Image 1 (cartoon, rainbow, N blue to C red):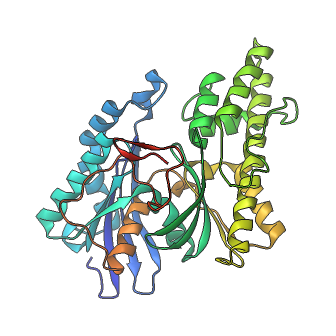
Image 2 (cartoon, rainbow, N blue to C red; image 1 turned 120 degrees about the vertical axis):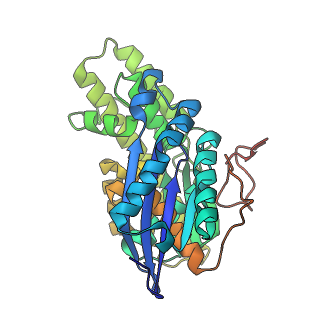
Length: 365
C-alpha cells in the first residue's frame, strides 16, 4: 500500500518510559488523522518487584522488543517501510536510556530507507492528540496530567505553547502512584486508586485542596499525598473499606483542585483576550480517570465551553500520538537532522522562566 499524493504515512516510535510502542498514522491533505496501527507493550511486570520504573530495566526492555513492534505496526497497517513518508520518534523528555534506544533506532530506519526523521517532544504529542482523534486544531486550553507532568498550557499552534501553570512539586500521576503504594494497591497507581474508590465514601476523610484560590494556576500535590499518609496512619490498621474511602477522598480532592486551577486559567486567557471561548482539552495518562473526566465535563458545560477528552487507549503513552506529531510537522516542513539528540528534559514552553529551576539536564519545569 502506497500513500497517495494527498496523504502522508508516518511511522511513530515511543520509548520515553516503561511502554515500548510503534504505530503508523495517515494524515490527509485536509488534516484528518487515521490510526492504521498502534502497538504497545507494557513492561510493568518487570518493574513491579521494585515498586517503580527502573531506568536500566526499561532501556533493556526497549532494546529487546522494539524491532518486533515496528515490524508488527507496519504489518498491522498493511504497509512496508518504503511506503512510509517519515519516521518520528520521541526525543524527550523522559528516561535518557529509553529515549536513546528509540531515537537511534528511528535514525537507523530513516537512514536505511532514505526517509526524513522527526524528533518529537513527548509533551507535544499529548498536546496535539486531539487533532488526531477529534480533528481539533489550535487554539485551545490544554490540561496535561501524566506521571511526570502536570501543566496547563495555551496551545496556539504547532510548536507554539504558553505555559500558564505547572506543578511546584509532584506530578499528578506520581501522586496517584505513591498513594496506591502507600495503601498497598497495585501499580500503576491511577487505575488501582480509581477501582478502589468506586466503593468508597469521598466525604469520610477530610483531605486538603492545595492551592485553591491562588491567582496563578499552579498545582501542588505533595501536601495532599502527605495528608493521605497521615490519615492512613491515624486510621491504621486499614480495612478494605478504609482504603476505598481514602481513595475516594483523594480523587475528590484531586478533582476539586484541578477544576479550581483550570477555572483560573480560563479567566486568564479570556481576560487577556487570547481566547474568547477556549475549548478545553485534557491529555495524558491521568486523563483516563473517570472522576476527573466527569468533573471537567461538568465545568465545561457550566461555562458553555467545548470539551475534548481523548479516548482511553490514547491517554497513556503510545506511538500513534508520536506519529501524528510527525505527520503534522512533516506537513509543515518541520524536519530534523540526523544530529538530533535525546533530551531528558524538554519543556514545551521554552521561553518561560522555569518554576522549579535549572539543572545539568536543562529546565526542570
